[in-house]
Image (cartoon, rainbow, N blue to C red):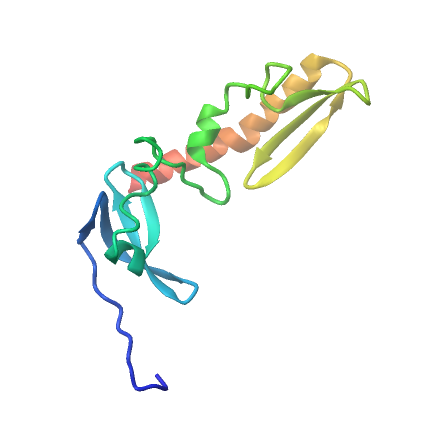
Length: 156
């Protein structure tokens, strides 16, 4: 380095920080060094070294959420949220996730969110057709994704 100081990454492997155990170095977060950590709740997270050492980060986030682990994301999609999404949200008026009534067009609209993007599946005059489109997309996108994630976990 220009100022004569050399920065060597600390070896935190196996050290515990609250509910976290440092597993291995991770890619830097901006200019800061970081570690891949395993939380007692079972989730992995990336944490900046300084936050581990000064005690600001002691879990994957589950401590802040009353013991409920925060969701993990793979390619912008949370397997936990997909599994829970079989129930319509409170603000859903059709009772089916991803199907809503578009008053201005007088049609049922079907859509699905996957990997951080909303996919419109079409507009339908019949409610049943919109539900079929949504269920078909769930099978093609969500179900195969969840199977892939389960297979990856089983291999670990």
